[in-house]
Image (cartoon, one colour):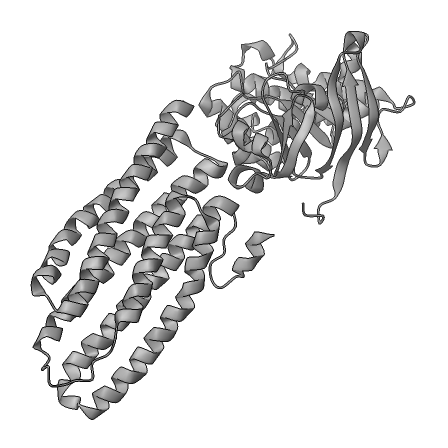
Length: 256
Length: 225
C-alpha cells in the first residue's frame, strides 16, 4: 500500500448493528486516500452499503441502528456525539442507486441545498448552480431546460443532476452507492468519465456490483465478505493478483 | 457463465498441449537431423512448420476471443495471457527447429575426412530436457520445475560459447570449409535460442502462479518468499 497519499478517511475497528443487535459489520479497518477513487465490492448483503452509510451517519435515520469503533475524517471521529451532522453531510455527499431528484425544477434541485447551507445573493446562487452543472458534465444538456422539472430528464441525466446537487455545497467526499446500476451503458460511461474527472477535487468511495466498473475507474478496491474486509489493495493488484483466495474466487465469478 | 469460461479454458489448454507436442516433435527431429544429417527428416520439419504456424494463430485468436467475451481477471487473466505468450514461444521454437533443419542440409556435404567436428550431443540433450520440462511446468503449474529449467539455461549458454570458440578456431584452420562452419555456428546459436524460449515459458509459468514478473534477470529466488 503506497503511503505517499494523504489519508482522508481512517476507519478503525468499525462494527455495525441493525435492530436487535444483529451485527452487519465486523471490525472493519481501512484508510481511504484523498483524491483517489476507492471501490467497494462484494456479494449482495456483505455490508458494502452499510459500511458506506456510516461515513455520513445517514444510518441514524433508522431507529435502533448503531455503529461502534472510530471513523476519522480529516482526523475528527465522526461517530462522536458532538459532531455537527448538517456540516458532516455537506462535507460528505451521497449519490444513491436510483436517481433521487427533488420534484422541482432542474435549477431549484441544485439551488435548494445551496440555500440550506449558505446565505448567498441570487446571482451568486445562479453562479454556483451553473458551476455545479458544468462540473457534473450536465450543463450543455440542460442549460435551456433549467425551469423544467428535474423528473423530466433521462435516468442518466437525473443521476448527473444528483451528482451536481451533491457538488453544489462543495463537499470533500462523495459516496456513491451503485450509482450506475439503474442506467444504460452509454449513460454509465458518461458517469464513469465524470467520476474520473471529479477525482481531482474530491475523495470518492463507490460501491459497485459491476466488477469491470471497479477495475476501470478505481485506484483502490476493498473486497467485503460477510461484513468483513477480506482484502484491500490497489485495484491493479486486486484484479491481476489478489492475495486472498476468497477475493480471487469472487472476482473470477466462482461465487457471489 | 463460469461454466462456459471453464470449457473455453479447457479447450485452450488442450490445443496448447497439442501445439507443444508438435513443437517438441519438430525439435526432436531437428536434433536427429543434426546427428544423422538425414535430409528426409530435415524436409519433413520444414514441411510441417506450416501447420504449427496456423495452429499458433488459431490459439491466439481463441485467446483474444476469450479476453473480449469474458474479460477475465486475476488467475483467469494470468492463465489466458500465459497461454498467449507460450503459444508465441512455441511457434518461435518450431521456427528455430526449421532453421536447424536448413542448416544441417549442408552438414552432409562435409567430407568425413575432416575429423574434428563440433560436438553437439550435450547441448542437444540439454535443450530436449529444457523443452520437455518447460511444457510440463506449464501443464502441471509447477513453479519448482520452471525454476529448475531457468537454472539450466546458463549451462546451455556456456556450451554455446565454447562451441563458438571451437568453431572459430576450426574456421581459421580449415578456411575452405568456411560455409560448413558458419552453419555449425548457426546451429549452436539456434540451440541456445531454443533454450532462451524455454526459459521464457518458465518465466511465464512463474508469473501465472505467483503473479510476479521475473524476466530480465530479476532474482528468481525472490519469488519464493
